[in-house]
Length: 389
Image 1 (spheres, helix red, strand yellow):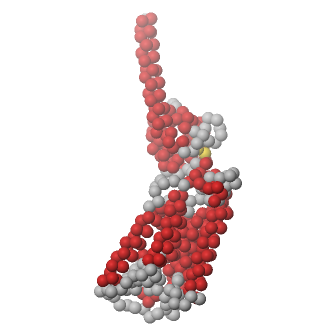
Image 2 (image 1 turned 135 degrees about the vertical axis):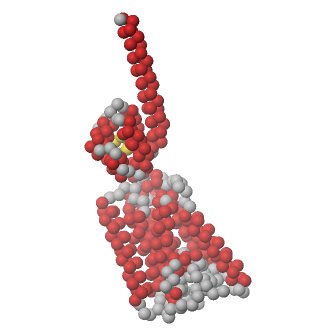
Image 3 (image 1 turned 180 degrees about the horizontal axis):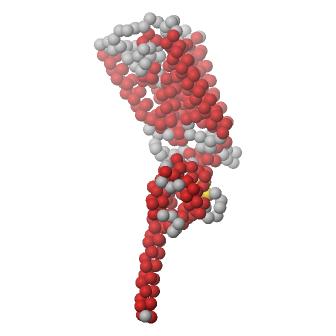
């Protein structure tokens, strides 16, 4: 009997050792897998409330009861500070209180949930949000497209005996050009941005949009900048169609000015975060602070618009500049940018302002569309073939 007892204890010890080894392997696996996710949030860890909300958004409560999820998260928060760190999370996931199916569900959704939570450091410091993940691809792509289309029309017009100069050469026959007598071809309200009145027009817009657009993409990412740019182009042509009833329109200025409006919108919603340590002696932080940014963009917008107004009304023989397209684009960037662009620390009043801004933009768009449909002062509609040989 004693021998059997000793054998039983030996077997039990081997089982205990094996279980301990499996548990240690699980802990190492969890630490290796989730350490990069938690490191982004620093020593302070992930806010318990944010993690709970994001896990629910990812659908975890469809397989784990909300009460059970709350219980697990409370146990994980060992020190009761309402934050979860890597060690606490690993202890929870490797503990006996978590069932295998719960471990798999939580582990499968945790990465997506944490990715949606902005780290505390990034909520305090706007500059911490600049990164190349993903790289800024939209402004580079749209600039290349505009260059290619410009070159194509330069060569085509050359074959027609028309030279493209620094300030002339827009192909008036192009189906891309906005023309007031062909407003029924709705694509023209967007595609006019691909045409430019000479080399200077193209180069100035390219420099403008790259200098303004690339920094925006580093923070707000390409899809937001894409929407802002295109909606600014549309708002620019709509505003132009309401104020200049008989004037054609070309150029990407509506999109460029939308980028100015977007920068101003970002300053409004991230004012405090842009001023993080701006007076601590760092020249870069001071130059990128909210008051300096706002001053620069207002001077740029007001100065360029003033020059356009002067050339439009007081300079004889100058090409007519679509001033209303500039203003419409900038207002679109501002109004859409407030609710759309990244707000690193959302406040209640900012949410309300975002809804108001969006409604104003939609009302503006609706008004312009109804005006285009009901106003009778436009040139007679041209129903001929849009693309003559």
